[in-house]
Image: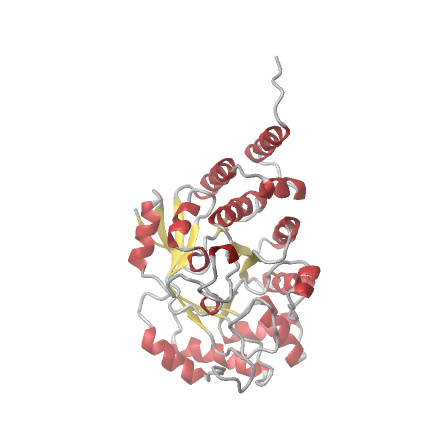
Length: 367
């Protein structure tokens, strides 16, 4: 005897079967999951997929966040980090000034410098090349994960070089990987609404394609929780998935929860815990060709990051000494965390903490 199922339950069962059979989810599947309130089933499916891919391993890295300049020609509506040249609080550091800063905060466990900043048109492209060179000469053993695709597009515009030529110059200076920022939501309509005047959708994707063709492995993000629709989010994931099919150059997908401008903003101005967990789980289910999905504790908090490890995430980012961009936009979390705390966080979720390098090579296992 066939038992008639309510439409939503039947649809969830169909998606469950697709996931368990290794079938790729569609735009309609992703939107259905976003509209569903069955977080436990979505999380359980994401956990199943993650366990198949990564077992109980959860990765982190000892890293430092560096920002050479906060002067930026773009005026993205969600950004509270940028400044105009000469505005109070604006700065542009020389290579030596950055080295002086790093010397004060550095410890021998740091494996990666995470370098992003403003699109400062008052300095030439060579300034950005020399910034990397100075760091690489002073700290040759530390990996330089530097610049967003939007910054690479900006460097191309101010230098007259192609994306490939820009990347080749930066690689010579020590660049080993691109950061994932600048993606926001990969929708030109969204970018117009949010005044994202930096790289458009096709330019963002083309920069990463060019990087992958040069052998660079890169990171990619999605900034969610403002004016975008559920369809926009899933379309974003599909575009990233398609490029990954083509190049296999992405290391990790990082959903970034939008932060309100003020740390005092009410709970109604922030993404709910429900939404954050659902986004991480759906990312794992939609991005079937990604090995790693990151729970970014800076934006969602340490305890929710721990829960996310049961819902598809297998990376908790890193120690992040002195994070500034999310905190300028109202993040309530610490600006960094110790290695011991990260290991405790992972072990508390019943997982195995793995210290990694930028390319996800395993450095140390904390079992």
